[in-house]
Length: 503
Image (cartoon, rainbow, N blue to C red; front, side, top):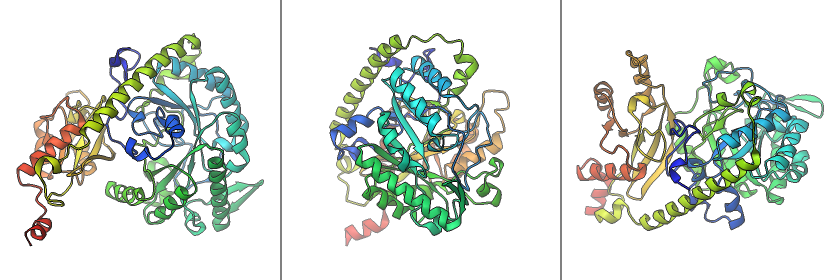
């Protein structure tokens, strides 16, 4: 099987979306402590494994419209085709429609390995629709992993049914373990046919979430915990959340930034609650990482997202389009199995190469004094394949890496408006470039395939060095090469460490 087909769409063109970095979030090393049977479950799950999300796609089906809690950061009524935000969908499906859509996507995008139900409400507040979808898929598409994402209020009552339908991956959104904090996030819950408010409501929700987490772990079901970082509300508190969910058996924690633009109509957005700065998110993720494997490659997907993380091909699979599709799923499974085997072979080769290069760092090359050179953040423009292969003006997001004497690690992604959209005016250049400069705050270099004179000058004026010299090179190798160049130029001397070394 030619590996050149991997990561491409049905027409053979490279997919424009998705994350193609080679070190996002929870690395293989971070998962190495897990038993083999658990690692086998996540090796091709793009939302649970950092490595998998470069190669495998996911999809969500929107079969669950009702919700049993209200969150200050959620408004399910809003829908924009270009928006990636949890709870947003274009159409709600019946279980039968959802199954046909899943089979159509899996036949068209053979890299799709995971089907998740995540809304637009809460899947377990719609148990009949959710479980019927899972039942039919487990029978008709047995090669697809089945996942559910829930707020956890109804989870304990549904654990046995989830296990019966072969659901072995569950995500619980846990934003707090203190009811006083929870009362600032959740105005009400609907519990035992009653609407309950305030601290009492938060206490019930937290107890249900923790009980459900324990029950899932006891049955061998993998649990990922999502948390929304809300500055001034739960930012410091999430460190405690991370400790507790790890102690109870969750194996991955995804701390996501609050999305609170006023135009979305959420309570937080209308009331002016700010979203976290990238540095705040990184600092909190790093603080929690001492207690928990951290996911850093999340794209906060729509509840009807289709494709690689960071892209959405949902428009290709609307109801009117899939109705006319003829799907031979038996043949599709044969093709999918061959492609998955080829991906596994490539991943094995990549792991072996990483092991060989594990000792390659600035420290070993430079005979460096420990702590002599400070770390540096760099932004990368990529359109896929783990390469620096995108024009600065075409990027809708930048991947941010930290280079240090220990190596290169992925920090996160920062969304931007495209500076150039291909026409004579290149869009609203001034505002788009200003937005990119704000998004790249803290970065000292930006690596891309090409960059124009005007953004080059503005980036330099902002203290961000543009670099187009590593086009089509692997991201991590290029980032480390630029870091070595910075060391050789004398830009990264840590004066405090030097004084200590001389003393």
